[in-house]
Length: 404
Image 1 (cartoon, one colour):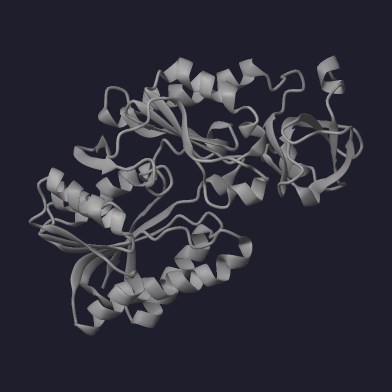
Image 2 (cartoon, rainbow, N blue to C red):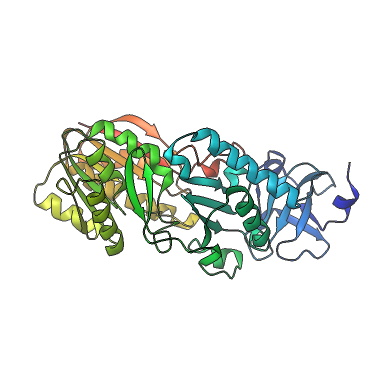
């Protein structure tokens, strides 16, 4: 069955024996799966996707310059990708956060829209109190930015909306966009948020991603269960999220945080002062690999070591080197942990699978000669929902391990 609006759309035909993932509602049609194209769709055009023998699959948005040639949004042949569609999807995302964070401070600082996880592939929106930080990773959605901004403004009434660009997206999507204010007032620097009773200053203009890592919210609280009276090493500490939570709520007796960014370390120090833990939490700028070698050389020991490195694999060809790096840094971290201590090891590299990452930790344990028990296996916080049709969304791995 097809409507007149569907018939009028440019048609993208999938190659034979390549359509099953899309019937299963995976939202990314890569260039290698595309067969014939009927019509002349422009970047951002709505298209209908069909099997090679004429069976309707889905409606999506087209980008000839991206390896993700079509992003799929609806499998309803009668549902156009119009303003009403986008409005309904944004409403769904907002309702989920209202349920997750009802009457809590976290509701004012969270991820409001999580791309494929909310059926809005290419759109990420973080809320920082009265400001929204928007990342658009799809050229097709960028062509609709005025509508999306209008919807966000009407539904959430922020004081300002700021656009941030993820590294590599300009090249991947053929997208020309610059960071900056797109509506209302510019956010203050820093902007202050609260998470599980801990306050943080955030630079949403120049900080990493949109300024803060909401995906680790519940993992930071979980780690506090293991830090009472402990000496804690927080590696790749950024603005001190794990370390300050450990000192404040986890009652760690000493925290040392290391990060290569001078701006991040300065913010971490300010966050420690704001939470009145400066006497127990200090932060240093430095290369983590060198610092690990230095601490091991000095015979230092810690009760808890936290590893939360930045993304190590941005392309499939980088996975092997990422696994090698994960193995090395986890091995050196294990060498610093006292008997019966804990390692918190994280990976935000979506291209590195859970099993591959766990394999790297296992290899580290063998090389370090340590016996390791997994106490908790965790992922991203609930405001980063995972679509069952797009498991690649489950990017964050977090293992809390006992080191014997």
